[in-house]
Image 1 (spheres, rainbow, N blue to C red):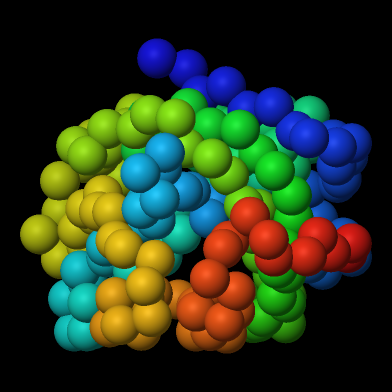
Image 2 (spheres, rainbow, N blue to C red):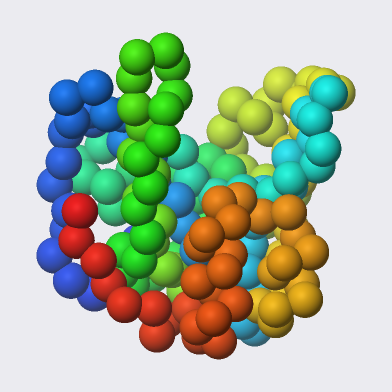
Length: 170
């Protein structure tokens, strides 16, 4: 099943890289039951943590929304409506390079707890494991989840409604 993303605004055109900045997109994927769908990561030598589903923008993607559409399909077999960009962070990636991650609030209509069609699901690796989970949006659950980035978790805790987070421009 293909992920269908519609935007309640203008599609964001973008290059894959801005200067030395790689672009990644992530979804605050909220189910109709008001659960947040995340990816739990278990990597050898590292504490368990969780991330928002998403990944890198590729040359074949028309814009950030189409990249998010592809990533949701690959990671969680997701079907969602994208609402708005609410958070962006620039951070070092490879030596001498920066990476920008843009986070969009989405209403997730369906997903698969067993994952999607991406390479992370096709090649089992006991030292680098992925699990699709849904967590409650209450303060205790969010803070205890190990969800990254922490600043965005604090924004979610403070908002009480992810769909009320203000839209941003980057």
